[in-house]
Image (cartoon, rainbow, N blue to C red; front, side, top):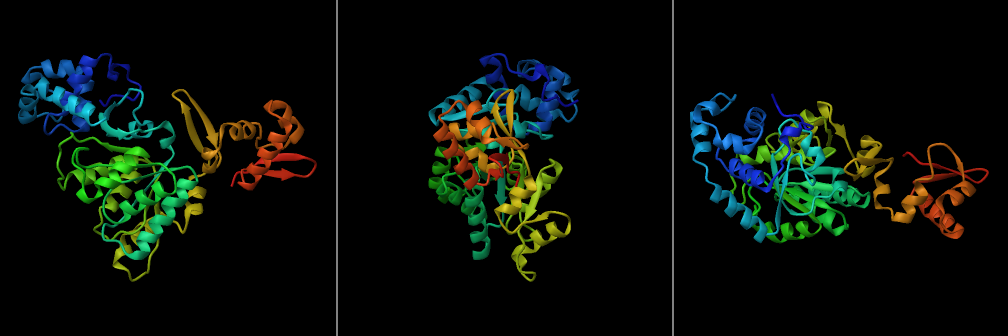
Length: 381
């Protein structure tokens, strides 16, 4: 049985248990699904680490080798890892605790812990991933840049994998547009890969976040990248594949997105381009063909913006995320049914001139529509 997201027994009630969970997570060969199986059986890392080899082997998927590795784990290794995280200003975001990305917690095999350098914000739940070839064409790079900049200006976070090519272009243009961006690592956060993107990673950490489920010093291994791709998809409302051959790792991210019930978008290329054959296959198989940011936003439709842990508000268009507090206050008084401007002035309790100016700004941003007779209504697209 896999622990439910709302299983109170999965919550962490002490720093000691957090340290013990870190010790358990550092055991080689222990992945998210086996972690879930162990916690479902023993309810705490303390109990798992104190269990006998025979008891551990009674858990589905745990064989003699993994049971022996668990029994030889060392608390001092966990303490060293924690100390290094603090030295590097890296936070550990534990599943079922505040700060852990809610969208990621809803996939079937979420990481029990995310190493995070920078800050993951609740508003980052409104994110779209942009992925594609490391050996992209000029067309692919320019398309990724336009999409990343447009999504950022619309108020969405751009997620990608810091790889060469499409990923780097997406991160860079999101930053240049003043938006937020999140990079999902396959390596540990102490091992920037590729190494020439160290400066880019540093910039991302200041305007978004670097995240990984791997221990700090984990080096690049081929098998880690497909596993990392489920995190990129899991953090996102949808995945855009800009350019991908039929062997591209970006297709793994698209498959994870489908399994996680996320949207999958694909950018078409020349029909004879090997660099776009993977995208064309996705479109043939039902992925949404996109030409620009408007196609993405239209497909995503109305969104729900997290405001606090237990509160959310409906966002009809992502551009609403970029509003100031007083613009949000005025817009909140405009609904899908027509309302008189005079009534908004009374309800908003803001100076009349400021309300009228704000309504004009909201109309210019296509967030409201004016109707005859001094009425306004929310625009839905």
